[in-house]
Image 1: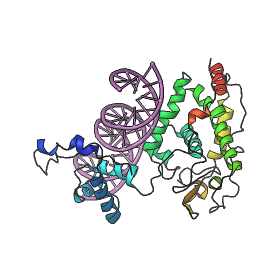
Image 2: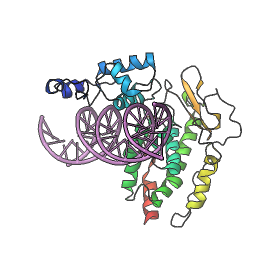
Image 3: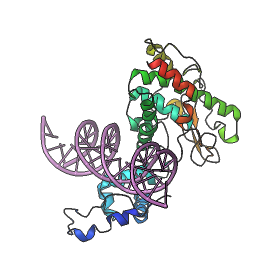
Image 4: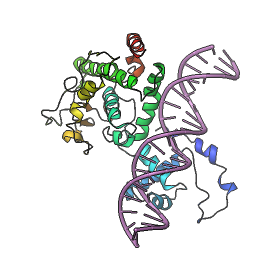
Length: 280
DNA sequence: AAGATCGTCAACCGCTCCCCA
DNA sequence: GTGGGGAGCGGTTGACGATCT
């Protein structure tokens, strides 16, 4: 765990400047969490469970707001939190779900087990918005939406499929929940890789249909669409989705997707030239 | 080597929603 | 019906390490 004790350095003098008042709770701490605080929160929640964060903070002996405790637990301490690089499948899901729901980060996060809304939000702002900036268009513009649909997403799909055929053991889909019969596979229901319609026209309708064909069949009220559910496969937990994509759970070897598979590497010079021309 | 700039991410803030008395 | 408290959400900030000049 990468927990910095910097909080003590930054806020260690707080108590000396504050009057002790249980009523006002003026000695509430802010800033980075210390190892001790993490330990206190983790132990308390492990024993008593989540909920009632304000009273939980008091009873756990934490000089933090309930909000702060909740955030720390959900984004960091919770055992199910998955750390590490966003995988290609996760990138694809984020792009697809964001195209449908916009900045509904918590809703999007429901479909990426172990990922927090904060993490997805940060990913979007630092990676996706950066690409929009490179292309000199707004991230919400039709131009950028088309760029994602016709270049970015197809390339992600290609790469995912290539990764599968490369077939390092870790890249193999989990077999635990193979009862997803009939649910589309990458590239078949989602989009046709390498299809690059005339982006100068109003082609978003057809692309929307392509992109939505699976999504519309999916019960988004269910955080695990098409019966996707955590499955134990011996070395970790895997989740499968209605798209036919599965995301290797924590504890898995994600190397086949991480390390050099940042979005920047997806955006080849060729793509950039193509897009810049198309966007003019 | 040192300062400037950039990228990432943890954490906070303010607002809204929901539940309950 | 309504007011208050708790929880959740999305936007924003700031610290810090990495990279660049």
